[in-house]
Every structure is written in structure tokens, then in C-alpha cells.
Amino acid sequence: MLVMGATGQTGRVVVDLLRARQEPVRAASRTPNVISGTDAVRFHWHDPSTHEPALDGVDRVFLVPPPSSVDPVGVVDPFLALARSRGVRRVVMLGSAVEFPNAPGRLELAATVRAEPGWVVLSPSGFMQNFLRPHAIGTAIRTDGVLSTSAPFGRLGWIDTADIAATAAAILTRPLLDEALRSDYVLTGPQALSFTEVAAIISARTGHRLPVKEVTVEQLAARHRAAGLTAEFAAILAANEDDVRTGRYDQVTTSVLELTGRPPRTFEDFVADHTQEWSPAPVTTD
Image (cartoon, rainbow, N blue to C red):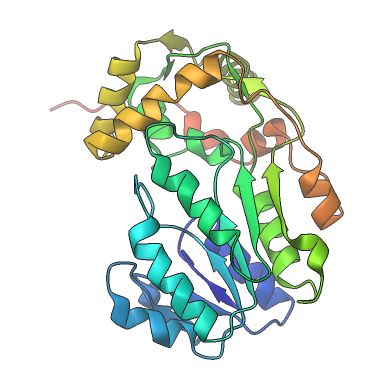
């Protein structure tokens, strides 16, 4: 089993879960030297010479598209063709329940994966980890002490990346002949929460008040750029909050429970494990 993004917040947990089950797994990353174990390989989307070695002997792939790419099809398509020719029989792609209307290539990629043998597209809602560093939202919270959003009352079914990883691992280890898995799964936590409700939970659990500041989409894009996102992706990410505001993503599914046998983690429990992350940043003086 090839796991892409093995040093990322989802991929590394998938690797750990598969290793714990003593499954044969190959961990792929641009920086394999930081991965423990002997099953790590270098993989870079824009270096085709790394693709074939990563696929050697593989019949299942956890596909993580190029991060922050507006149009990933051009680099992923040749890889999928190579995977098909090498005998890959299941492709599990990490997509997103939050659509990016100004980045149609991301939707096109999901359609491309659906043409692959044994395909599964996982579409998680907003990550709970978005409120932690180094994500743009978490970095801004730590730096400014406020949660800035253009959709303070729009709800998302926030999900822990560990639950996404558990779902991916469960699918990867199911029999290859299980045709019932050829499907799209929207993954959410147990409840949908607005940014205002998230801030209230963080404040109550940590004892540090986290105000919510409503900003314009343009101001939000500027904050994302300051956190290190490209200007193009920062604009797309900020504009997406228009859909959040209208309630488009106010949904909860049972996919995690159905596929793993256990309910997804609550946001309250997530905050309890990261209380120090939201403590006030230390004040430094010259």
C-alpha cells in the first residue's frame, strides 16, 4: 500500500495505523528522511522519476493531490495512468467536501479518480487542525489572539484528521473485490459548528477568551497570504467562506462510524488535547 503525504497531518496517521495492523505499507514524501522505518521513499509530484519506484509492487494507493494546487489534474493524470499500468487496483483519494468554485481542476480530479479501478473519494469537511499552527487560521489565532472570519455564524462539520486517517486505513485494508466501496464519502465530525461556536468551546476549555472578528473576504485573503499561502490559493480559500456563510456545508454524516465502527471525535475532546496551543502568545520586549 502506497501512502502519499506520509509526513502530512493525515498521511502520517494512515501510515501508523497500517503499520500497527502489520500491513505492508510504503510511506511516500518529499522528505522521506524524517520518516521512521525502512519503508519510506521520496515522492514529488513534479519529479516523475520518483513515481515509478514509489509504485513498485503496489496494488493500493492513498492519493493525496498536490497541496494548494488550483489545477492538479495535469500532474496527477500521468501518475494515475502509470499506477493503472502497474496493476494498482484501489485508489483512495483525499478530496474535500468544501468545494472551490474558482478552482475547477480540483473537481475534475475527483471525476478522473472515479474512472480508476476500485476508486474511493473521501471528502472531509473542515479540519479541526485548521485551528492549530501552522495552518493559516491557527497561525493568525496565535499571533493576533482573535479568530478572524468572514462567516462567523456559518457552520461546518469539523473533523479530526485522525478520523479521516482511520477511515482511509479501513478502506485500504478491505478486500479488493469489495465493489461496495466504489463510492464517494463525505466525512464530518459528530456535529456542525460555526466559527463563533468553535471560539466559545476553545475559550471555555482553555480559560483563554478567543474573540471572533468579522472581516471582509479581501482582509481574510491577506491574512492567509501573511501565513504563507500563495496569493491565488489564499484568494480561493477566503472566497469559499461565502458558501460557508450561506449554510452550504452545514451537514453531518455517519460515514466515519459506518466505515470504522466508531463515532468521530468531538471538537470538545480535540480542544482538550491541545489546550496549550491557544494560550496567549508570550510578549517579547527589546
